[in-house]
Length: 210
Image 1 (cartoon, helix red, strand yellow):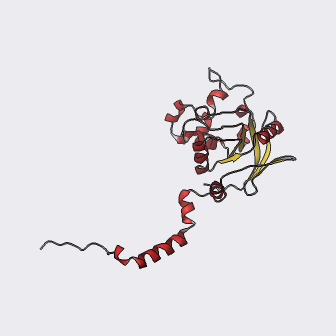
Image 2 (image 1 turned 90 degrees about the vertical axis):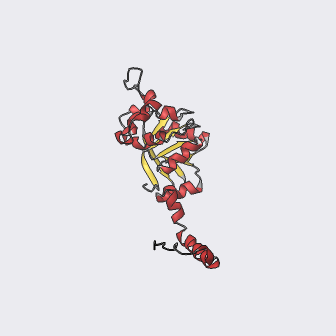
Image 3 (image 1 turned 180 degrees about the horizontal axis):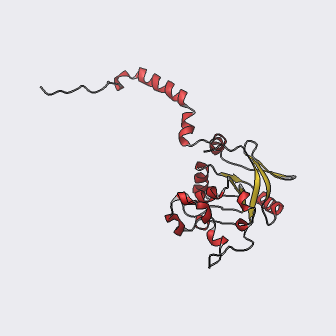
């Protein structure tokens, strides 16, 4: 994964609560291979009418939405099923961060594991950010090191679990998190083996037929 430190790019306001994973990517699209690009399916049934035509005024249909790296929403974002494809859709569309007052637990974990920052803000701060953006994409800065979000003169704090912050800042996955302790693990293994030499009996004897 690519490390995330600062995201300085347009953000899309999505003033909706309880956006669940089935809305993020309807189940019928999950039969498609990831190689087709899941971004085209993101919020499909909100972006399109019953005839498949783009809904005028929906934020992801805005001409500048393709440049956006952050999505600002209301509480309980990513609730519902555990489908990781919901995160794929956001990442493939181009988002690096979602800001909301709360997230579905499994969604947030999947997000971090795919390099997507779930930034948790208070409900009041979410409303302030949405008001500052208005009805179109606008400039927004996310600083993961400082855990701050800024739009013009508006600056708010966000929270994220320390382990997740470390993973995203370094572009690490779970294996990388373990590797940072490689020296400690090696010292333990050496000490453990020296204290219990009987555990290492060597390779089994070669059996030959006479």
